[in-house]
Image (cartoon, rainbow, N blue to C red):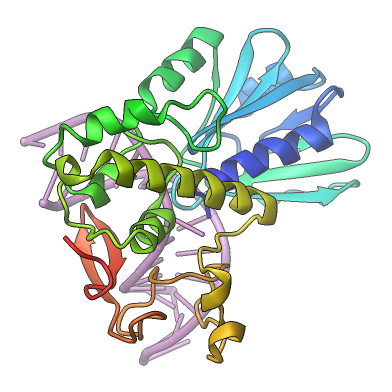
Length: 269
DNA sequence: AGCTCATGGCGAG
DNA sequence: TCGCCCTGAGCTG
């Protein structure tokens, strides 16, 4: 269930359990067997995350590049590791922990320069210290594409997915169909800093919560969320249900093959 | 057992 | 824009 906060959290969790230690590396499912054999018994040096891309650094030059895609999942557990199921693409294990990766879009061994090339094609990541929000705004402010599509474009901004996209536009009352060039510098500044705060909290809690304290179920005297996506939100997957603020119906539509959610009353062109 | 859907992204046309 | 890749849960029957 991966947006950028999940990947940064995984980078931390892989590092805390495996970094600096000799690691058993296997690929029970088989698609990563050759690389796993090369890495098996070596030391995991460090981990890195940029947007939805995760990197595990082994030795001095080799990196495992992981992208979860829509279906990828990671499961940690204590040693001893149970027999793996046949969909485990990558298992790391040591004397205290194991971790299984299933269903990733990408799990490949890359060189340092190949890793650099991946960073180069990604936009600024609100969760990285080296991020330049101005680089994102330069693209947005020149584009006639909708802001909803631009926020999902990883070359523009890295790490935002369908949930943060919908939620941050709601929180700033921005109509998702507005053109990028109609986003003001002040609006972008506010959206960016909000994403930094929301996504940092997402890393901390390992889930996406976007509802302000004054709009929580407890504060509003309404029943808690029904959806199982994991957090408290304003519009994501709440189509046909009442807006927490105005009471109007949340709408949904297809945008670039993804489900978009917004409140047509609260969010203005 | 088979269908649908999901917080993603790529390449072909 | 479409089809395709990766997996698993929650339906339907």
